[in-house]
Amino acid sequence: MDAIVTVVGKDRVGIIAGVTQALSASGVNILSISQTILEEYFTMIMKVDIGHLSVDRKTLNARLEAEGGQLGVQITLIHEEVLKAMHRI
Image (cartoon, rainbow, N blue to C red; front, side, top):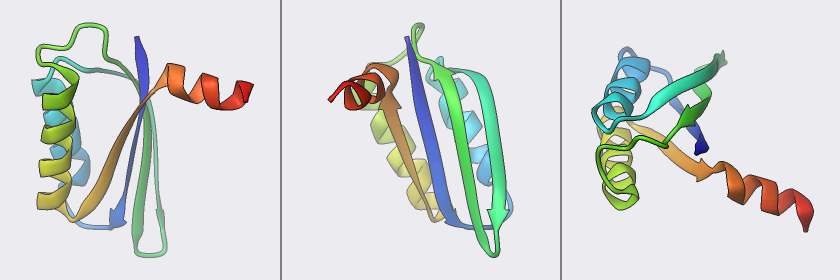
């Protein structure tokens, strides 16, 4: 199962490290990643494999929310099926 993770916020040192460590600790594998800086704002989009999670989705979302709070960014995880369904409507 794949999902999309987005990260947006004011740029600072350690964002990529913090987000990827939180994902790795939950058994998430990063399949593809794109990141850029738009003026002073950091943006990142990742396609990830959540098929082998070591935690449940609620715990993963809580970890990402906590990490986002520490880093001062917003982290969102959207299941790929939700995105596909949005395009069918």
